[in-house]
Length: 366
Ligand code: SAH
Image 1 (tube, rainbow, N blue to C red):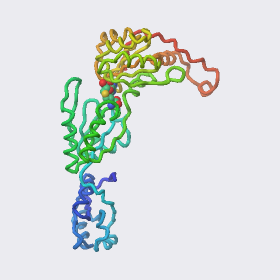
Image 2: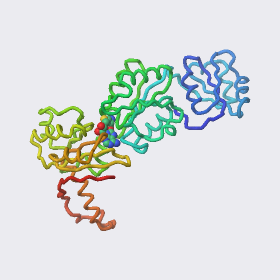
Image 3: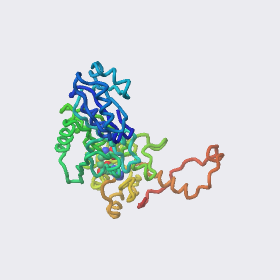
Image 4: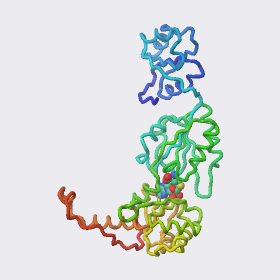
């Protein structure tokens, strides 16, 4: 249960055996309550709780956990206190949540992700999970930056996993904040593997992946009726084999490379060698959803050169396919659009969609 109410200074008595109440105590403490504990069946009585209440503002909340429901004094509590009954979780260690942070900014996180941060005791974050001010989003958490830059592993993967296990085993709620979606590259499944092996309960909260959102940020839809009905997300940090390139070209859909911006030459050469049209529209979108967002658009054969000329650098998403034209189609239409009236917005007689944008090199800042 997430406690949304501010309980600062409110006395709360948690009733239950020590093995069952740890998590409940920590949760109410996080909400600001002044928690006292009654952890033996004998001696819990209305007088005790009343005394606890008298120390503070007089509000009396008793939380009765698991088997304590049957303790002799508990029935009497109901007359004097607001009694909350909680099932025992049966697991008094902590837990871990792998949380998708989206491609940038707190606005692209899910409500579940925000809730997980609000509840966190520890947050392990990195550069790609740039959600903004963690002191506000995770006010009670110890924040550990395990950030990685390409080629530099600030904290080795095994150590990140060991850190999560260590903190969770101490009873803490550990949030591993991961850029985009936890399961799209980014080693999310390895972390789940390690946590499961260590017996730590783990939850994965999905996120908005850069593979879809970053092209969208510059007006490139990854699928489009009559233009592309597949999109394939490929890790670009290793070269494509001729077989892989051949399969991608044969699909005739959209190809999205993550971690590919430093391999633009081998990636585009592989697709060209597999028979892709050298004028196929392609784009590099750098730092999506940040104030520094910009994109380079060119025919596939020119993309690496234009990208190098613009000095594109990670993080960036590379998109190859006919859908890339769409950004320019919409941009041009907007420039020439007359203010819409409801009738022209909804009615027939709209001009047929045409894809006439030429894939010349364009560098666009946000
Ligand atoms: N799990 C992440 C991807 C991790 S791999 C997700 O679902 O988005 C890291 C790669 O993601 C980067 O090299 C880059 O290709 C891409 N990426 C992530 N965030 C990005 C952003 N804001 N702008 C551009 N590319 C981004």
